[in-house]
Amino acid sequence: MAIALMAVLGPQVSNVIITLSVIYMPRTARIVRSVVLVVREMTFVQAARALGAPDMGIMFRDVLPGCLPPTIVQGTFIFAYSILTEAALSFLGAGVPPHIPSWGNIVSSGQLFMRDAPWISLFPGIAIVLACLGLNLLGDGLRDALDPQLREVL
Image (cartoon, rainbow, N blue to C red; front, side, top):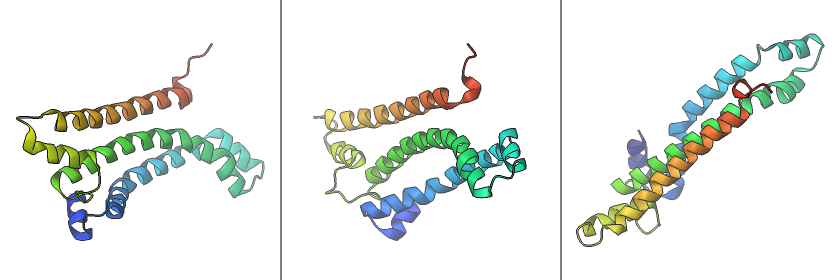
């Protein structure tokens, strides 16, 4: 889908941002919706509703703080996927223009010199892997820190 969108829109940085947003927005919306459906049925939200709190107050004071941790964690995973997708699009020539530095562009341009100078493609590839791994580990750490069900009772 990303390649098709980039073929229609053309190779520009703004088009890459639009494409990645369009691709990953449904996943984010689905997760936010499912979390909101769970949080709005919890007892503290029901108690606030029974006490006569206004809907906007319940939304900002009770539901929104319950939705932020899973959304933040999912955001780190989506950011790692976006890095990988942008690098793949740039490698294939459908991403940002060749004169703009991108890990995918660097790996693609180093492809011609793999026999003589493999480090031209190797180091950007390692950087992509480390960035995605680091963001996934950050997401796991945030999930462990922010999820109240995973906390130990002292």
